[in-house]
Amino acid sequence: MTLPLVRILAIGFPEADLEKLRSILTEGESRFDLASPKGGAGELDAETAELLASDSCAVLLLGAPNPATARKRLRPLHSAYPSLPVVVISGDVADEDGDAPVLPTFEVARRALKREGARDVLQASLLSSDDACVLPGILAHLVENRRLVRELEKARELGLHLAHHDTLTGLPNRQLFRTRLRELLARARRHPRPLAVFFIDLDRFKQVNDTLGHNLGDLLLIEVGRRIRGCIRETDLVARRGGDEFTVILDGVADGPSAARVAQKIVDALREPLVLDGHRLRIGGSVGISLSPADGRDVEALVKCADIAMYRAKARGGGFEFFLPEMGQRTSRWLDLEHELRGGIDRGEFVLHYQPLVNIESGRIASLEALVRWNHPERGLVYPDAFIGVAEQSGLISELGHAVLLEACRQNREWKDRGLPIVPVAVNFSAKQFQTGNPVEGVREVLEETGLSSEYLDIELTESAIMRDPAFATDTLRRLRDLGLRIAIDDFGTGHSSLAYLKRFPITKLKIDRAFVSALMRDPKDAAICRAIISMAHNLQLKAVAEGVEETRQLEFLRHPGCDEVQGYLFAKPQDAERTERLLTGTSPLEATPISSAAASS
Image (cartoon, rainbow, N blue to C red; front, side, top):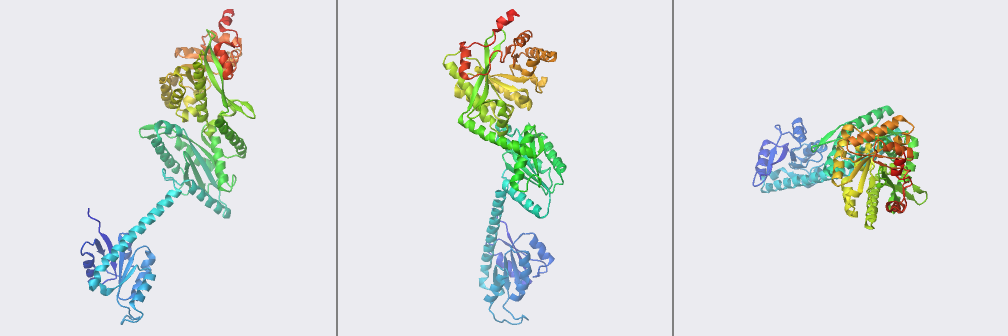
């Protein structure tokens, strides 16, 4: 491979000396290319400046008749190009008129010129002596030294960049964000100037990572960073905080409405579909906004307030929210509960109660629904409404859901091993758990770990859980059905199901929401809805299940349109494993009169 020529720029030399230089620098294996302005001037004229500005010259050779002239020529050159190595080739030391050599010696002049910035100083007589061969070596050393210095500078710049920027997206990282925000707040204390902080969290990002892989997740984060960057001004800053969280500083934002417009622009940009590696994806984001000085005058306060507002936006289904003081009070209680919840999971404080689903014709238990309870050491038995929302928002729902699934399958396998007449146990998947986790692999692993056959496990999902992303839901439900599970849509009638999608979902049951069942004897409309759901379920070859049955009249009504199964306090309240075992063995009968007898007497 032929190495490129190294350009050396020579100025201030008469033509005869330029020829000597060319001869010296092209002898042997030297790879130098000598360039010189046409005029050969030693001053920083326009032509010389143009050559130097191109940054193509590795070393500058500066000629001068004497050191005094060399000093005059060197000063402006070194001032304009301090990193460019300069080698001075000068005539003998001369008096002020330049007529005759005077003391001090040339060595003293050499030291003086080096203090002015010259890397080396040679006598012009060298060009005509046998020692001229040292010049290529001097130049080669300076070229290599400059190369090493540049590499070190690049490494230092890269190190600084990596220390302050996210390696994936190239955006500023948390440290640089905090530094920049601290600087802006310090300036605002001297010259009052409002600013806004955004805390942005993506929706369904974990789902993309778990189902499509981390490589696609990385591409998604890069695209998200680009979209957010496109929504703000050059003077603003967007940083990747970590994971799927981003933060933004709007410097000098005029007021709340101005910040809201930018936030809405970001929300709209994140909602736009994107195609990555052949996959068409839809994501969303939640944005929390804090304003300075109203919500805080330091970094920690503003970020915390924006974070709290973001969680409020996420709880409302996305979009953006401004921080309000009452949010902080709620969040303090929320954080305390999250801490207790995390400890409760670690200590195994969560237990399952089981409520039977009864076949309306035979009166026998068709299956059991597993319902989680928190056996709190101080507050006693805590019901799901008090902690499921916190579990979902804190990311603990997957851990809690896995624990529920594992215990339900373990208990059912234990009953089977003891020879009890077991039935399928239904486990509820929350919307967050279903959308952000990997339910298929999670179920498969639990079945393998407990040794329970899939025919003894049902999965229940609400309409909202599956309608958030129908395409994902269809694929996931089909894979769960392939494992041998039965799937029910819980609380049917209260969500936003599309009948076009409903017929595609590989489900087995529709569970009529208890709100319709409780009012069916009082409100003809609720009664009509119950009949319609039962009829639709049968036409779709699904079983219809009524929840919240508490009266014999409700049971009698549901029997006529052919409701398949019923569940409610009329038969049994949710109870612990020991009492449920008595129901399975028949030693503790259902509380309601056997359905067959009730039907015969009606």
